[in-house]
Amino acid sequence: MRNKLITIGLIIASILFQGCNDMKAQSTSNKAITFTNKVFKTTFSFIDTSLATYEATGLARVHYPYAVSFKECTFEGDVIAFLETNIKTFRTSFGAHLTFDNCTFRGDVNFRGSTVNGLINFQNCVFHGNVSFEEIESRSHAWFSKSYFKGETRFHNARFNGKVNFMESIFDSVVYFQGANFRDESQFSLASFWKYADFTLCYFDQAAIFNYCTFHHQAVFNNSRFNDRIEFTGTTFKNELYMNDCRFFDFLNTHKMNIEKNLHLNKSFFYRGDPVFSDELAAKILK
Image: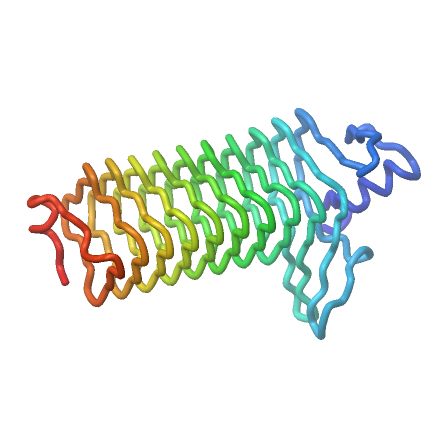
């Protein structure tokens, strides 16, 4: 199985020492690597244990200082940047930009625990399998706009230090942002959530924008903190909206918001005063 894995570390090594027809390397000072219109037919793994640095007992990290870019590529197998064995757990760090522009992923995608110093770009991508960005740390901006997530998607305990954008993205299955930390503006406008959407225990330090989204199943924001405004202008909730035990330090914008069932605000507190609800919306509030 190991000889079937395509590891980026081995590919880079082949460029430096042997040359490789599978890649197009840019001859720049930052040694950026670019893949364009490439089909990867087997599992693509960033876990090259020969490059690992051991951080603690049972924990190692593979570090890539290069900017890595995939444009209009197709991954037939899984994409792996996290590996857990009986002995060690391997995670991945990227010292520069990590870009997947207009790519298709047929298998599962796992970037759990990755650290990315540069821009994260997964715009216009299609994810057919399950996706994990759990515990990822984005130290710059992260773009996931106009992407299509068909499988279960996990962003548990993700940390976004820059702006994050999921505008016009589609989530066909369950999506989890439980415990995510948004240090800059989070943009979800025009996104569609077809199954359960979990935003419990989230921390929004800047504006949280969900304008004109559609939530077809339950949307749960319980125990979350909003230090800046949260916007639901024109947003449609076809099921229950749970915002129990939340803390709102700025305005909750519900202009033209439509809830077909109920809005749950039990034990939530508005530090700038209660928001103004339409009569129709006010009748659906449960405290």
